[in-house]
Image (cartoon, rainbow over all chains, first blue to last red; front, top):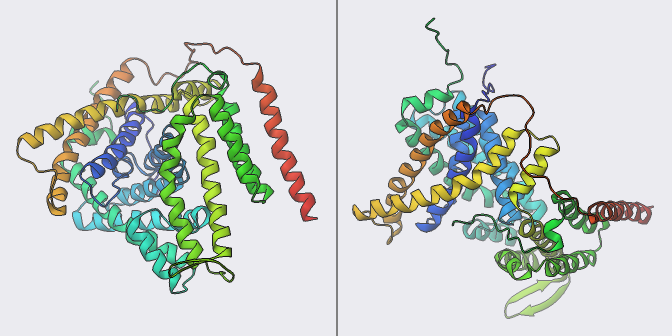
Length: 200
Length: 257
């Protein structure tokens, strides 16, 4: 268990981070091109977590939101840097513990990532927007809970839950399929337990 | 998508200011109303940001950023105005909807806070080049590896956009449907996303080798390509902003006693 957080800071992992941030952006773009009711903006973060480990995943997630927040002026993203950090961390830890080995196990990993997102996002939603998330389905549910007199926290929690968990499920399944198909010479670059054999 | 950053250099004094001074302004603009705790401080800071944006001749480009948040603000007004938990006093009625005073006040708080944050960030984003920010961060002690990560994001994204377009065209010419029912669009997701992601992951391997060959991992001190001219106002404005924040904190404590 000691090596769950083991991270190699080589040129390969450093290069992985911007690539993952790019992939996040691309996922979001493709989801909007295909008009899918999903975000798909954490594919890169999950790839970073699975390949580089929890620390790299967390860095990918946090930097992703910081960079977009500070360049596109969308400071709503900026606040959710914490959420992305949590997703990267949790998916990274679960991947190191072996939850990305089969498709069924990867679903557990997805739920873990989704719950991390919900748990971190809910307080942020309540503090900054009074509980809404900006997603149509989630906010409709939030309105129903508020009209029925439930507390803001429960409403906001459910609001996040119905949006985040399905989104993370699809994201992690995509990541699982991608990494299964990735060539060995690529994935071996990020294998922390790999040993270098010397021929001399 | 060639130009990913919103920054445009139009030569005003805001462009010449140090990025840190502008970051300090964001901090001040967000902290002052929140610490002060009075509703009128929000419009004051918003007005201040609008004036500065006008000074930097960037007001027009800030509009789309603000327009984007309007739906969010409208939703907040509707939900909180109608269903806020301590709603008691009726403010006005529209058709069958009853808006309450407490909810609308609460929504005004959140809405103004969002607008205030958006505008102060817009000021920073529209007048600061990311490259400059990264270089200043490196000069004040951030690791150059960190700087590389940020700078390369700006190179990678336009490249990936290009390859996404190429792959989308290629897949369409093979008969992939990208429009139509939800199921059709979901089916198109994987054939579109996997080649782009895969090729960019494979590119990282080549890039890593190229970097290592050029001595990226060396630990000696890096030198900088450009020297930035000092702006006289940086110190004065910075000191003024810090003073304002301290004043507000003192004022709040004094009003609590």
